[in-house]
Image 1 (cartoon, rainbow, N blue to C red):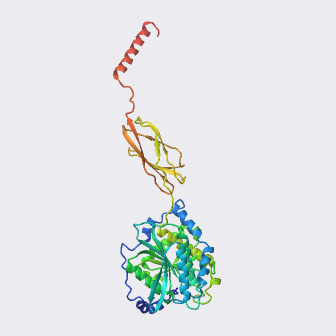
Image 2 (spheres, one colour):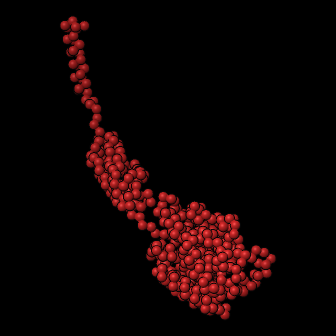
Image 3 (spheres, one colour):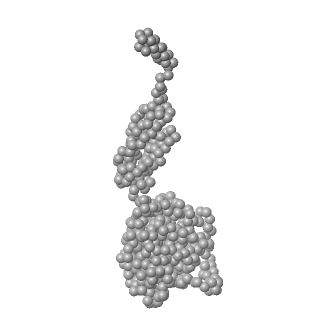
Length: 453
C-alpha cells in the first residue's frame, strides 16, 4: 500500500512522476453504457429489508465471516515471512492462495506478468454468475507481496485474508453476476501486477462494474480507530462510496462501522481507474504506526477490527453481485363461491393458496368489474380467506386471482366465473293497485251498510 499523500505541494511535485508511470495507459471513456451511479444501483438492488430473504441471506453470510476464520487465513499468509515480489516466499504465498481458491471449487488461474524489470504472478479465482444474459464482473482484491524486511500482516495479508474468507463463504452460493477473487504481486513496486491485470481486462473488453480493493485494514488501537474505516475513490466511483454507506446503514447491527469518505489515494485499484473502471480502496482509519517495518506483525494487529472491515466489504460485494435465494412461490389459489347471482347482492368468495415454505400469503384479485383487491392479507398458508364482493350490473364476470408470499414471490393466476342477472324488482303493476283500491272501497261500503261504524 502506498501511503496517502496529504500535502498538496508534494502532490504537485509528483505529478510528472505519475504521468510518466502511467504513460501509454489508455483512459477508457465513461459513457452511459459503462458509467454507473448510486441511484441506479440503489433502485435496482438495494431494496432489501428485514422481511426480504436476500436481507436474511446476507446477514447469514456476514455472520459466517468470524474472527476465527479470518485469523486462520492471516496466520497462514504471514507464515511465509516477507514476500518480496519475485522471491520464493512470494511465489509460495501465491501457490497457497491458488490452492485455497481451487479447493473451494472456483475456476482458478495464475496470471503471469513481466513489467518494469519484475516478473511474478497474480492469482485469480472466478465464481461465475448464474444469469446467462449478464456479462457483469465484480472484483474483490488485495496484494500478497510485501517490502523486503516486513512480514506484512497489515500490509497486506489483512486484505488477502479478506479475499480468501469471502471466497470461502461465497463459493457455496449462487450469484446473478460473476465474482473474481484476485490477489496481486508487485504492489510495493507501484502496483505492477494490478497494472498488467487491468490492462489485460481492458484489452479483453471485460465488463468490470466494480473493484473492491482491500489494503491495510488491521490496525486500530482506540475505539475511534476501530469504529471507522476510510474509503478512497475517484470522481467516477462516488456511487460506490454512496452504495457502501447504504450497506453500512442497512447492516449496521452486524458490521458496526462508520464510513469515512476520503477522496483519492493509491493502491491496486489505481490502474483500474486509469482504464475507466470504477473501484474503491478500503483502508484502516488510523495509518499503521508499523508500516513497512518488521513490527507489522500479528502481535500489532487488531483481529476484531479487521473482521468488521471484512464483513463490510463482503456485504457490499454480495449486494452488487446479487445473491440468489431459495424461496418457492405459493401455488395458484383455488377459488370457490356462487357461480350465479343477482346484481346488488353481496356474495362471499373463498380463496386458498398453499405456500411450500409455509409463509403467509396475500391475494391480488381482479373482479372484472373495475374493482381490484390489492394484496389482501396476510393469510395463513392453506387457510381459507373469505372475501366479499357485490356486482352491480348483470353480465358474466371472470375473477382472476393470484397469491404472493411475504418475499414477493408470486403464484400463477387462477380464474373463476360468475353470471349476474338483474335484481328482482318490487311489484308495480297498476292493475294490482286498482284491485286493492276497489277492494278497500267495497270493504268500506259493507262496514257502513251494517252499521259497524
